[in-house]
Length: 460
Ligand code: UGA
Image (cartoon, rainbow, N blue to C red):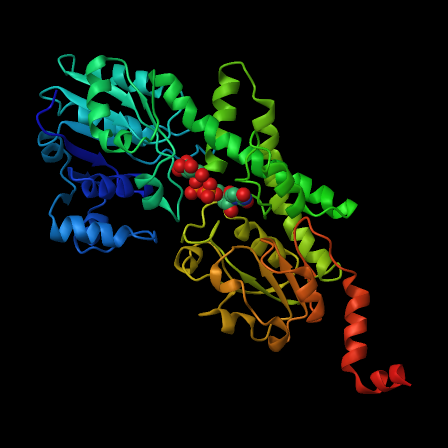
């Protein structure tokens, strides 16, 4: 249909910037548009606003060297010189009612409407509630009755921290269209992936929009489920790692997303579970399971505060606690809905003195956490604390010699350490869903052994 595909991506957030950079890497001419002039200027200097592995190299290669990637604030010029427009603007949660806030998406559609002078494809990459594609289509037609365009839904499934790799090696590509022309243009854009046998699933607009929500909510359900089973393990002496392994070996269940932790966070699962719950309620079909997942995950974050308090002998008043990890998971600087925020604030409310450290997320955290000591590296973070709480599974937190820093208690929400090793080191170690060896007794044992006189007594 088009002689050559020329892409404009509206919005340079996670999805927009990664998609734009990756499409240019695939060989397309791409213009990334954003209203934020400062951000665009930084991008033009290859300053990447987020921490994401491989993204800087991709932008450098395609913007500086190959010149296939451009950045601008000029939507009009960008639309004029492309034939496919991807909308990838933010769709946050509306604070007052948990519904998806479509303001940015609607504004983008309205602005694009006035600029459509010839047939173009408008592709929704933002996560939007079911029916949004149709809704935007009617907005555009109202503003510009002569506009020639097709609306497409093409949700993105990339994860923060591995966004570039996920975009370049997707499990599947979902395309919701209404016309053969739109379908065939989209097939052309993703030809390189179908050549590599990546499944391309064609649907209508609504099914495509719902696939994104259903997938995220299902993964969130798996996590909430495994977290609750981990709680049960702690009471029964079962080991969550074995339980999850045993479940995951069943191909019908699958091994992924069965890692217990401090509760899911980030910009997607919390937002999308709430978004689907409110949309389904509006439609008169409450989703009881997803509602329970939201409640279970909120509760879990609070439970983690209590878990630390219990580990510290039921009070953290004036205790020196170091929290390792503020990002909602490793390999990202994103702190949105991170369990670490609930944990830090909860411990502060209970009178603890907090020191925090994260390899990448500290600049973001400084805007929302106060009255904490900001350590500049992990060593500094451990010095002078008695208790360590691990919230994010960064590589650099995996091999720490806690006793050499005088750390007596470690609460590990990511199960990074072996409980037996910690026991042998004399550390009171609490993890998630695993047996806590009889630490109190064992600590006494270790101090007996360390104490010479008692050792002699034992030998006698
Ligand atoms: C998620 C989805 O995985 C992506 O497919 C989707 O494209 C993206 O949302 C989105 O909608 O944009 P993301 O939020 O980047 O990706 O992060 P995940 O890696 O899925 O992790 C989400 C949360 O679940 C994190 O807090 C993580 O620590 C937690 N998690 C994940 C667990 O607690 N256990 C697990 O086994 C897996």
